[in-house]
Length: 171
Image (cartoon, rainbow, N blue to C red; front, side):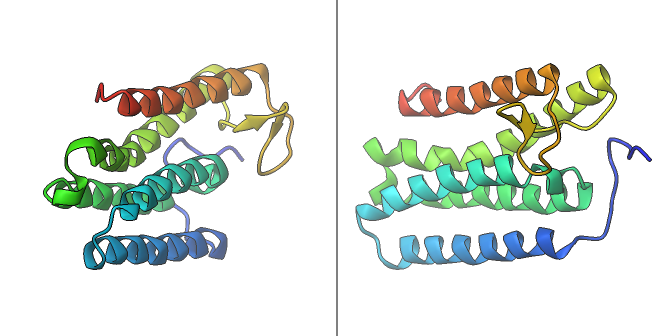
């Protein structure tokens, strides 16, 4: 039976474990940043934002279909925005390193782009969006359609555009 666009299911262990791991990593990164103000924290924040957001989006997208899971990740994204406003007032993150903290905004943008991708997939294909790589869904191994491939490439281009805009200081 096909699930509706918005559906709530109880979270599975495979949903909860990454959330707990992400929460622990987030707390660890920000404790280090707040307690040990050093120049290399800027690179740590950059890597944290870049790697974690890419992994959530690319590998947990099946979990993000469950709106209960999506809302928890959306709360993480809101926490990122709150942390951004704290960090922008810290001297070490001002001037040239300011661009590194702007990456904290990507989480919420990428989560919204994910729902847009799902919406287009539902409207065009009448089914869920598969994150395509080499013509197959990354998680299930199911054959991805041309539409899935186009949506995947378009979403990756949005992510790349965000990174480029932030690196050039346009955002």
